[in-house]
Image (cartoon, rainbow, N blue to C red):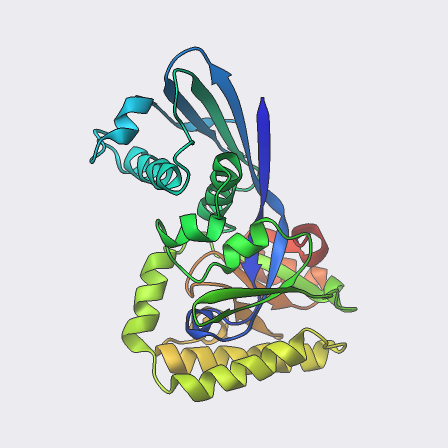
Length: 303
């Protein structure tokens, strides 16, 4: 049996503008997704996907000959997407999924499906490892996006990420803020569609070059910041810049105007996790009083 694993991700700076070459600070998470592959004596793929509670939420089966067909016979959207990924993987490696032997495949998340930590990117990276192909190419040819999530999937430390002429530039960096006990990730009880978020950005972006320069500066300062007060100032400025460029209201102004400390959106605005600063007692009491019960300290989230 072959086993593969990929880390989840969080984008601390550079959301949206990373698509246009801005420098982004991203962190791999302690939560990820595993893939187990066992060969079977039948030329087909049987697949099951399990959630963090070991409950099977999706399963399918298809013959290897179906991958040679132009179109999938799958009827549901998830099966079609999986079929597309495997078909692209096979196109990138002609020796993948051939012969008379098949595979029993099991994929398991160790985070909640609606958390937005990279259920797609971790799956793509695992399949790329299995197929022995470039995960960035697989991502480009299927889901698209900047690729920072793919970079986090195989990194064991925070990264500085940007696209240089659409080619990923990845630099592992030391980022372990002395004030991390004052940083918390709060889930907004809904998952944001990343493709929808990207479309919103492209439809609304303006003054891009000046904003990218400012975001780059914030990212550079943030990764070496040793003061919580300075950190809060930087993420508040970041929120304002992204809000202006995308014509969106920062989440603190929109939902949490009476929160005493700083809040920053992570990834697509309006869903998934936000980053909040403060004491454990205050952050817990504030957000739980408003119905947000998933609150994870920085040290329990970041790898």
